Image 1 (tube, rainbow, N blue to C red):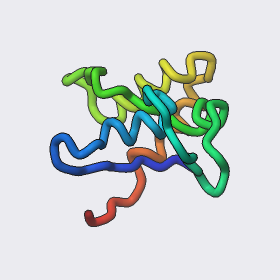
Image 2: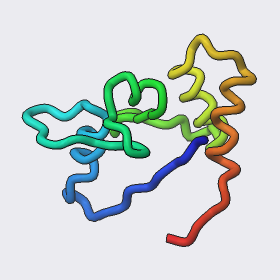
Image 3: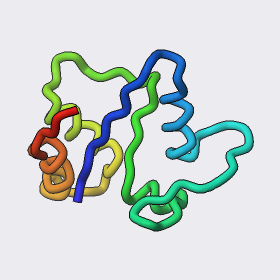
Image 4: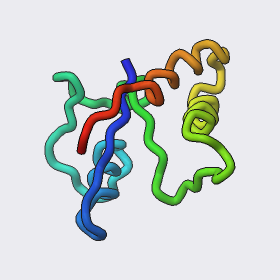
Length: 100
């Protein structure tokens, strides 16, 4: 199953720091753990089940959302077939919308 999540907050509230901790990119001492579906998030679990585009990355303005997700997935899963990529990406842009 694929999910896409949103994180909204004021400038300087710690969004990037939180994402860096979840992605295991934080510098300094981190106390505690991150759990996904009741499992401790390890480096291996993050690599297989998660994806994170760092804030410094830029999106190509001429690509649609679907094309951007597919492009990113092709980079992350370089050895996967086009069918596997499509299967992983499709749920991200066909998921029902929920009110914020």
